[in-house]
Amino acid sequence: MSDMAETRKTIDAYYLASPLIDDVQCAYFFVNRDETCPFRQQTLAEFAKDKVVIELDSFENIITCIEAGQGIALLPGYLTETKKLQKWEETSRPITYYSYE
Image (cartoon, rainbow, N blue to C red; front, top):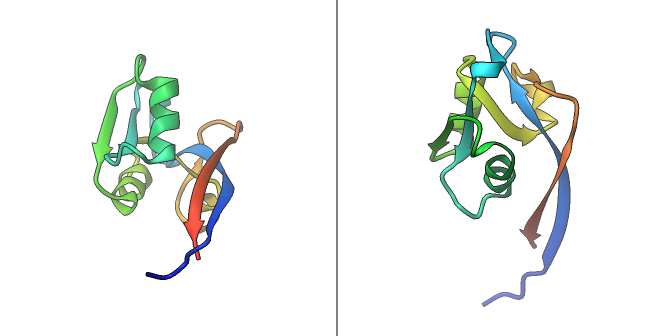
């Protein structure tokens, strides 16, 4: 067994949507099915009572749905530079995660 160091990191996340989305007020919120996912936990804390939340199995599936204009998801902000996504709102949410090296 190797000795891997655990490093706590933070990434700026935003609720992102496609420029194709028509009505963000009626949009679905997409989350990862993994209950330990910090993006999921933050989204459910903010919107579980007020919005329809759809669970998907992978990060890539969430991005594909969001790019197609099917809803909104809390995702890393850098995706606005690499995917067809825009910020739904300007407020960032710092998401803590762990890496192991």
